[in-house]
Length: 180
Image (cartoon, rainbow, N blue to C red; front, side, top):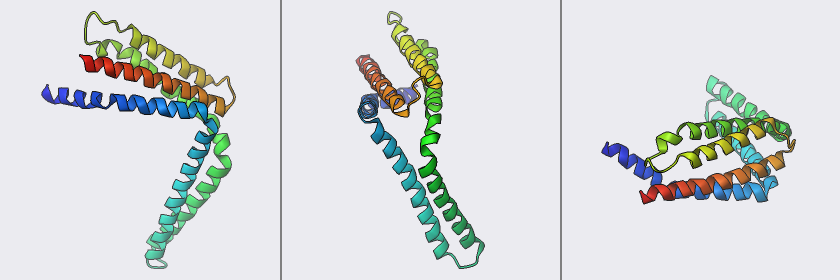
């Protein structure tokens, strides 16, 4: 019981930081959606190129003609081709982003609704705000799932607003939990 209490205290201790990060990322998504797209693109490309470079270094270090050398060369070449595909096909692949984010928000909202009673500590405190919050998040997830906006930038701005709201509500929840 004491270990569980310590774990809960550790989680709630940094809940304000989680809420602040959510809100700040939401502001970034809202104000500069194109920069979010570019950052994601360059992080993906940079990661793939670094992995390809590491594979080529492994190939140079291995004895020439060995299976290890050949597999490292193939891995590096595959990663370079992957980086090329990402640079060319990222915009079309982002068309799947609304579906992925929508599904995640639907699952998150439903889990908040389901756990609203479990999170209720006092009998006289209503779980209604948590249920309402979960319902709003789930509805936003369904809206994003069916993507009426047809624009990734508008989608990123909507996600930004939702992240800001989620950050504020997480902060309120953390402050309420700290008073207990």
